[in-house]
Image (cartoon, rainbow, N blue to C red; front, side, top):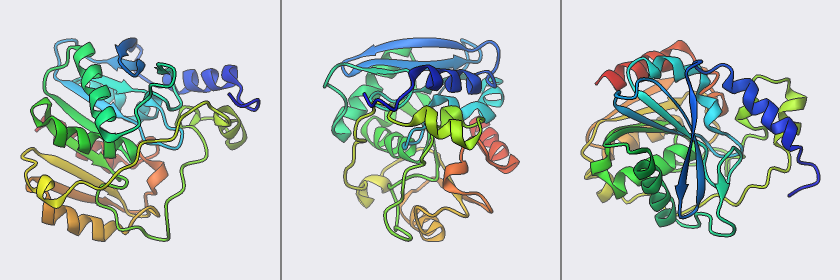
Length: 267
């Protein structure tokens, strides 16, 4: 662990954002072969399950605070901290996910531990990449899929390889200085990378998909990705959110994001 990392500051920043979640939220700890996964849950226990995955570059489950209350009105919400990344999940020593197969096995174990049947699965950026791979791996477990500015599942890179957001989304409400200090040196591991899904596999993905793209994204060519998605995903609805950056999602997004997601969840 880096000497620069201050766990107390990080936990305080995490709690500050979680205070914006519905008061009825609860923390759930799910054991998996890759470590214990921390899940923030809210919404009716008998509601259809909605599983949310955060982006990379330091994001955590807390970053869904702007949508959590709306989602919890109709669904049982499970927002997940990735194992081996910033947040409150804990890796099992050196046995953290290293491949796409590891990631899908980890998420299978999380869904099993939550007792979640076929779920709506969604993610932002790296979390969207994981969500899409899991939908391809286990389509029977995913009823509907939404992807917020996914990286790099359909990407044609714009301006080189995208840089990770420098500060943790758990501290998104703090001033810029404390945000960066809270996340600095967090003992995370290298994120899993791998090939993009094959077009043939994407064309076989027979479930509703909502693809929301940031109009000001610097991680890819937004309109090329929109066209590519329409060509390879048979049941995709694609929306470009104007004047929104990649790293503003999902916590600092316009009302249009909430409307689109709510409509998609109602199905």
